[in-house]
Length: 156
Image 1 (tube, helix red, strand yellow):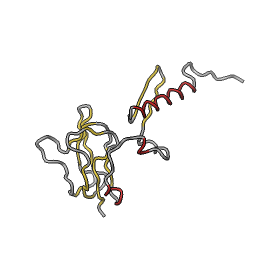
Image 2 (cartoon, rainbow, N blue to C red):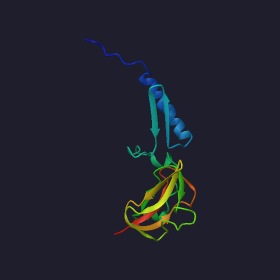
Image 3 (cartoon, one colour):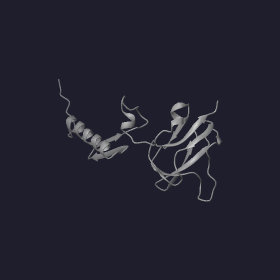
Image 4 (cartoon, helix red, strand yellow):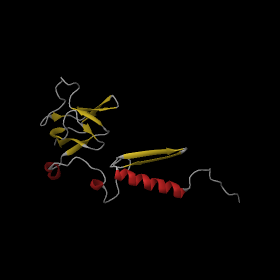
């Protein structure tokens, strides 16, 4: 019987230790993700990602987010969250009218705002049709990944 040799590299224990240290750093610095490459080893930790739900009991204690208005807790409002870190703009230019205002009816796929990230303008669209109940961010202010941008009251 032949033994399989592992390629030279860090032991499983070293990888787990590195992941734990990065997790502690992630929490300490209140980051949403961190990535480290050491040779061929690449470790990336992300909080609040879309690939897996957070563990039970995690959530609000892990990621500081914009407070959810009271009306969102008591109704069926849908939150549109920032898909990236960047600068929030309500219009395509400083002199243009905002894409939407509170109380406006929107269609699924309609542009709600722009988030500028690394000199790229990213259009953020409505996930569903409804009425804009609240705009949660001021124009030209920075936003974090997962931060609430809009509350939409779905069309019934």
